[in-house]
Image (cartoon, rainbow, N blue to C red; front, side, top):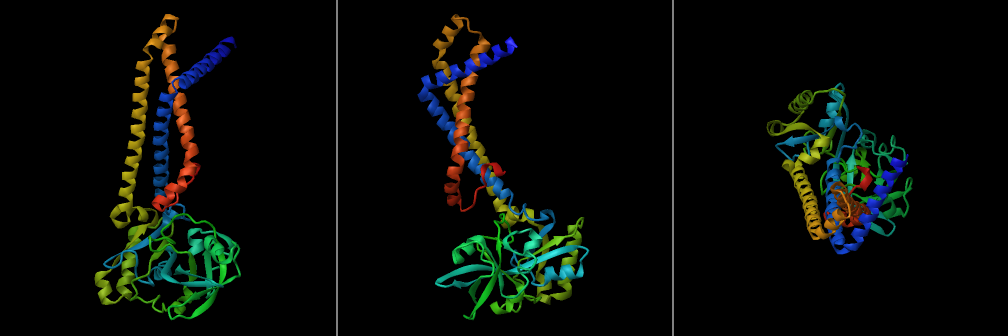
Length: 378
């Protein structure tokens, strides 16, 4: 028991002495802490951004079975309008579900509020296929009836000054200039970053309308095999080979599409969890590698600077070390004392970085135009 207390007292004394030395050499301590604090903070911010980008599409329901239909010979992000639906109808043993949408922009109005909005005209499978939850409304029926609309909570506040906008009406203009009231049937919860509602920078959609309203927007060719401009997704049944699906897709194209499309269009399913990182020839993945290298380099430079400052300080304290040896100090004790001081400085810098992180994330997010995850959410 006495040995245990003696050990605790010794450690306590090490920390007391370390703190006195830090205060005594405050200029060196501040410079060292600031350098390490900056390095840790920037590394945390970069690391959080990289982590967030790696999680795109991975929080979707059944993410490992969700695929995006990517085209070769046309726009790579769109394909034939009826294709994914026909896949479900002809190959139910392969395809569990499908989703298609057409992106439009139109004027939405409520009272004296008029804004041009991004609208996603899509299948009623959107909510339950990807697990997008509703704050208000019933996911089973929200996208069933014509002239119904599901909106984000930000849109609800923007037009109705409240989140619970279910049952409210909002006017949406057609391309001919006429206006029709749409009934709000659902308000979305916060949805994770994904390539369904936010396929690219031009398609960050906030209004979701069922496809049985496509005639109002002049989209009569939505179900046409000559329409090659519809982003499409499929969910595979468990344990289904992608190669089997690949063959089935191209067989349907050969059976239904026009000759010119048969000759020029090839469609391949791409795992949705990989799509975001590999699109544009892997541009996002290369950028994340670069940012990761920069973050590690910044942290390495901060560590090197910290070590150099520690060595420089030790050299300046040779006289103090000599006095300690004369007074009976052992080498091991002196080394431990210096290590305790360094540990305290690292702890202070780390705590400051953790405190600064939530304060700097909004600034960093505005700079890069992306949300940054909370520190303890990854």
